[in-house]
Length: 145
Image: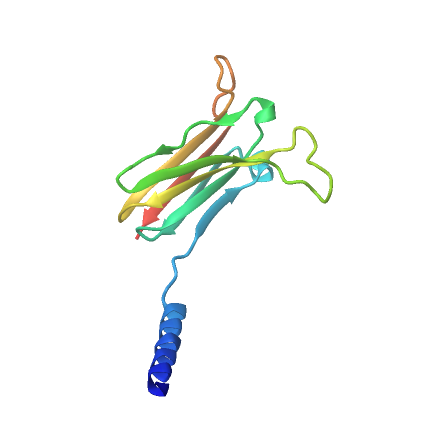
């Protein structure tokens, strides 16, 4: 009985060590703040991800101004797939709620399907007829390894 317990203990320790030493997928995140867009209205970035991994893009957004990010355009949908898009409200500071008109964020999640290169592009516009188009733009080049 004692030898069985010892064996179970050894297997548990070895399994834990192997799991702890296994390479974990790196979470890639790209974020652009309002301050960045105020300085440069058109921003381009590049990222590298592994096939099978997911990554997020988080951009400043303020729907109270009438502006909104248009749907993300993926250059090669065999390489990248958009899996989620959500709005993130501004955070409260301490016990105070955010002031009206405080910008929040929009967040997109993409999955890298296979090796290759694809682009993701977005425009921040007022969507109605005659509204400003492409006030801010964001372009991302994604290399999947």
